[in-house]
Amino acid sequence: MTPALLVLEDGSIFRGAGFGSAEDAHAEIVFNTCMTGYLEIATDPSYRGQMVCMTYPLIGNYGVTVEQAEARQPWISALIVREIAPFHSHHRARYALSEYLADAGIPGICDVDTRALTRRLRARGAMRAIVTRNERGRSEADLVAAANRIPALGAQALVAGAGVAEAFTYAHGSGGRVVVLDCGIKSNILRSLSRRGLEVIVVPYTATAADVLALSPRGIVLSNGPGDPEAVPAVTASVKELVASDVPILGICLGHQMLGLAAGGTTSRLPFGHHGGNHAVRDLETGVVKITSQNHEFQVDRESLPPSSGFVVSQVNVNDGTVEGLRHRSRAIRSVQYHPEGAPGPQDNQPLFDDFVAGLGAT
Image (cartoon, rainbow, N blue to C red):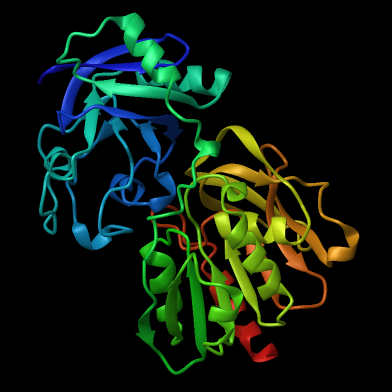
């Protein structure tokens, strides 16, 4: 393998070996604690603009089964691992992970001390970084300076291009029409809706409230997606109109944050985000704790919701107390910061989709 470098904006340099594409990557770096599910992570549109460090030490041993992908393409900017499996074994695998990333133009770096890297990110927060084989022979000082010139994640409207450009019907079920506002939706959210017999229509994030309501939905889903919710104020304005329409709404991840903004709340950045399949969340009404899959950098600020909005915090993160769910006091509107569809991660929260379907009868 060719020597490669991971250069952080704080001047830290990690040396390793390149795999995947030989291209350079310039992006923010975050860490993910999942032991498996690297394909679902790589193809999650919420990772647009980010490179991912996997904390589990061995990655790639079961190859790539494209049917398990969460999008038609990988969305991560680069992949950082301790060890990339030299061979893979799975009866459905079509590619080695390195081959899959190379075909998509995405670089990887292995032989990195990912434990030390993760500790640094935990201590200092997510940082901008460069993965490079440095074929042009740039100095380390030049590389650090280049890392510091990478635009901050919050300064980019990453939702643009992460979802569909035109509306389409994903499923023709008879259980009621649901319109999904696509900010970069994961495929398993759509599959979870389809399995419950719904007619599922996906519309681009640029669709106005009038566009959505013209489809006569019995329910609306605000999808996950990349970046800062405050970077797309037009979407939040549309969500505010949808909230006023009395149609049941389910917000997931970025959709949860947009619902919080539409309700009059504020959002802020977490130091290093939540990325993994083992985040404990407590329901404040029942006291039940469930393990969730998460991938986000921003949060709805817990004390920011105006009492007049009708929204209350319904769930919180057991580890840091951040908001994990909102619900309306009197209407069938709720949201979660985590990913109830899993992929990767636990399936404990799939009943959330059942609750959403049950609420469609409220219209």
